[in-house]
Length: 117
Image (tube, rainbow, N blue to C red):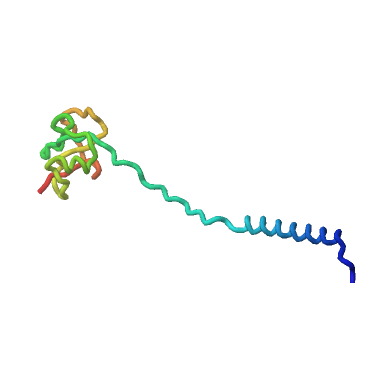
């Protein structure tokens, strides 16, 4: 049997420390942290539109805009309550200066408020 000398102990200790160091580094890079991707929160605010009264018989604007707000706020502020199968009461536009008598056509649901029953 070979006699263990101080030199052999240092070599053995160095080899073990090197192995431990490599093992620690390997384990550290072997696993990815469980990082949850954050889901972006929809922070887009509803657009404030210029709301014009519409003559139900002609489907045209009757004057300058009456409200400059979101659809939800305008519904709460006046008597048109956006009931289905009713004529258009208010038309929402991004244009602040529509001429009187502008034909509103068939606007998208976000751009119209229908009369109440």
